[in-house]
Length: 259
Image (cartoon, rainbow, N blue to C red; front, top):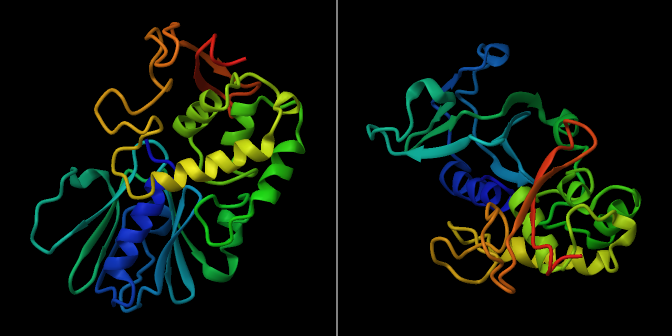
């Protein structure tokens, strides 16, 4: 599942391949932007902002969000794509590379000066050079009645956490995901752990929160409903949390290790 660490790695890979290169072919397969042609422009850089990707080319920005199924791939010219062509939403070619965005949940072209319309709502980026832990804590504490899992996943509070990290963080801090923020004893410690955990996974292709990099042993609770807790053996529980459809989160927790 794409979360902040996945998007950070994607941006780093795209930036390494494309930054400074001239776009020779541009094919945008989203009706609203199908007439936009970026060919002849130089890619300035590709950066991540939370779970968003921003490709800068002069005064225009390609803004994308992977959502659940999206991915950016890099191919050498003439090599076979690993996903079907009908899933491609954008194709950008340079002299050396073909960059393809597949099944992107969001794809739009915005003026770089208006980039804040796409990402200005985001809280501090956990993997950004301007990471601000104090602001993230203040954002979380500003809504004391909100369940901790909902608050952590709200990108307006801090940017980069998805459902995997949220559930794993709650377990590691011994907090049930349903617990309101006002009952979280150490929001600063929770934020500090979030930063350490996502940073530790930046260079991992297989995300782990247990420290064990083996299939089936990488996570504490996420996706493990009915299985024994790795610490105490109690069966992991599963439910949904959120007051509105927008807030709905699947949650997993150990009823003994988390309170």
